[in-house]
Structure formats: C-alpha cells, structure tokens
Length: 135
Image 1 (cartoon, rainbow, N blue to C red):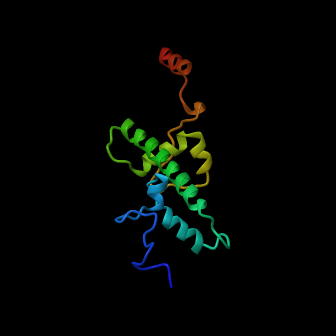
Image 2: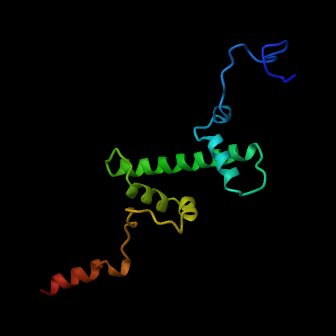
Image 3: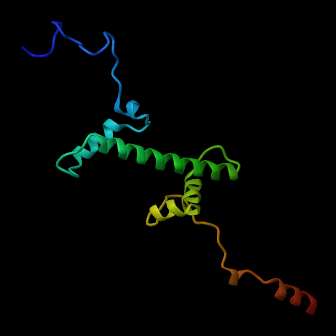
C-alpha cells in the first residue's frame, strides 16, 4: 500500500485545502529558487546540490540586481530621465567601488565611458590670463 490516496491518515498534518508555496516565497525572495536549483543541477557544477545552495545563490543575485538597479535609477534621475538605459548602468557600475571591482573586465554595450579630462589637457588660468594681456 502506497502512502497516497484517500485512506486513513491522508493529508495528516496538512490543512484540507493547503496551497503550494514556492521556495522563493518561503525564503521571501523575488528571484526563482527552483529555476536556479535546476540550473545548478543541469550545469554539472557538482555531483550533488544541497537544499540551501540555490536559496543562498538566489538571495545573492537578488541583492546584486537590486543594488545595481537602485544606483542606475539614481543615475537616470540625475540625468532627468525616467527610464534606465545602458549608459546609466555604466555610470552606476563605474562610480561604485565594489561594483566596479566585480565588473572590472565587463564591457557594457552602449555604455560609453566615464567623463574625465586629464588635468594636463585643461588650459590653465595663468596661461589664459597672460595670453589675453599680451594682445
């Protein structure tokens, strides 16, 4: 006799109409724990994958995404825009020390570069003032 069916003890310990609760909901996350678990298993990163590994990885990925989106949103607001474009992501990443270190070897398409002019190339005030007086 299998443990399934409507016999005695069926649904023992559970409410009559219990709904399924995803692992993401249990962990209080937005990122999909089940999908990450499947990717970890299919990717053959290890022979076995523990129950906590995909939850932890989902939490880390969600944190990084939230951090990046917040900084990129701030960059968009600084440029008086309501939508985040790759340029805003680039500015967010390169102006944050930790994200810049994490994404140091990453190229963001259509991101451009940080505005920077070498001080040697900027005309100095002394030379500009002297040149105008000589004329």
